Length: 241
Image (cartoon, rainbow, N blue to C red; front, side, top):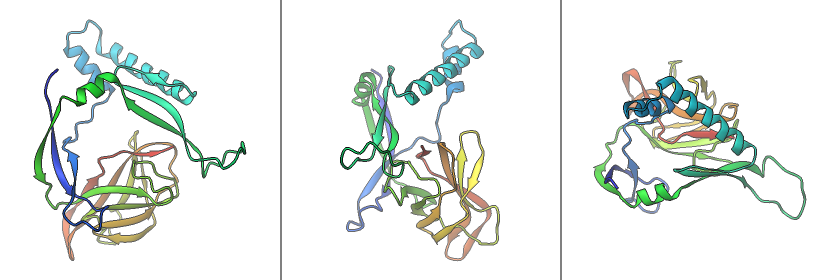
């Protein structure tokens, strides 16, 4: 199997306040997220006899089948991952009542054999400590304490990192934005804590889906502001179920 190298940046770990010199590793993906369109192009470049439009249509059709299957309560196993429906939350006693605030449907994704075996051939190269530029290190759902990207609509979320403060206050282009897969944006209108290393805000009433968190600000340090807004993007997608 080919040797794969993941380039790793070190970031200070804000979760362990009692330790000041521990770091977490962040894979340097340099924005390389591929979609069905990119996969179709790669297949075409591999000298497939199928046309690009045909391949893309097949990939999109597969997405629909997988979506319908999992939402229907069944699991999907392909050559990369195993996707299975599951449940978050507990029932106290044998009451059959479902409380959406306590129990909710969830999806678990487990690496398939090929992916697990492939990980054993991945080598990591540490690039060093990432510079002190603006970044989002962690998003926490205040109600559920989830840090895996799952957030609650109309719920409080805590965002930690550096140089996150939304400033100056009189610029309407600045703020916290949740960008849906289609490109539509929803802006958080209530920010209760607005500090360089920590933002506390109320998530909008977001419909189910996957979102990219963006913070747009001109803040840099102290009372200094950039001439143009800077967009800080969270690496982990946010999920509303």
